[in-house]
Amino acid sequence: MIPTPHINVSEQGIIAETVLMPGDPLRAKFIAETYLENPIQFNEIRNMFGYTGTYKGKKVSVMGSGMGIPSIGIYSYELIHFYGVKNLIRIGSCGALQKDIKIRDIIIGMSASTTSNFAMQYNLPGTYAPTASWPLMKKAIEVADSKGIEIKVGNVLSADVFYDDDADSWKQWAKMGVLAIEMEAAALYMNASRAGVNALGIFTVSDSFTSHEVTTAEERQTSFTNMMEIALECV
Ligand code: HPA
Image (cartoon, rainbow, N blue to C red; front, side, top):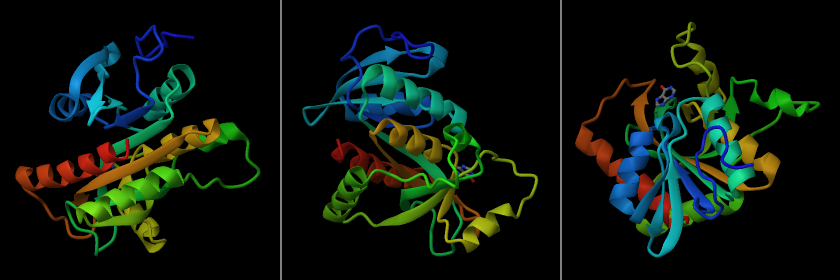
């Protein structure tokens, strides 16, 4: 039933089949104004701005997800089940857990471990492995390769806690080969898998748990641009 509680769109076709989802709604606005042709804003409830435009002639939407699993869980569910969205690409930042992953690197989340209980709703008789959709991931890797953009592909951790009471808990995940921490991909992957649609998370490394490396705003912009190009070329 539309409009939904969180997206104020009363007609089908306003939201594209492919939606890019940055965490920050103002990032969605920036992306729409910078990369899309003729962007139209479709949502402003809770300031979770969403836009539809075209990129190289193809219809695409971009909408904020908010921070954390409950937030992206709500928005991605409504997009998939009420607006017919088929491809959801999270574009976000992450914190690196491995020494060989540097600030500004681009990571593709092949899978997303999590500290969240989101999967509990499915009553599975075991532990679920939230996984990106292969067609989207394959396309993203091909785009990165063709542009000469270096990427790392692997498991990320979708954490429920940013300020962890146990400041060393990340080391346990690092030992298991997890590349980086973010806070949304696992719910996105589960919602998409459950509904039989496609999801992918692409991340730029904004901070490092191993080196505490910092970067300039200009450097962040370059890696952000590379991540955006990969996401948009997947459309
Ligand atoms: N933790 C969780 N999410 C993040 C981080 C982090 O350190 N950096 C960027 N997104």
